[in-house]
Image 1 (cartoon, helix red, strand yellow):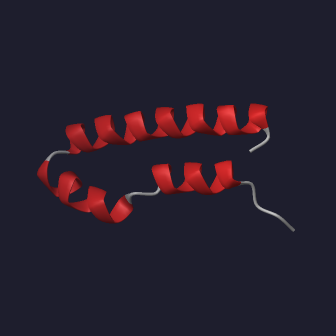
Image 2 (cartoon, rainbow, N blue to C red):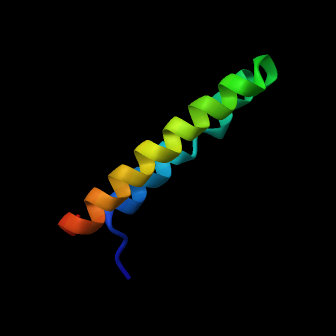
Length: 54
C-alpha cells in the first residue's frame, strides 16, 4: 500500500497539538482561530494534492 505525499503533508499541517497546548492555556479564542486557519490550509492542500495526484 502506498500513501500519497499530500496525505502526509495535510496530516502534518493539521496535527500541531503539542504547539497548540500553550496557546490553548493562554486564550481559547486565539486557539480556535489558529486551528480554523490550519484546517482551511490543510483542506486546500489536500484538494490540490488530490486533484494533481501527488
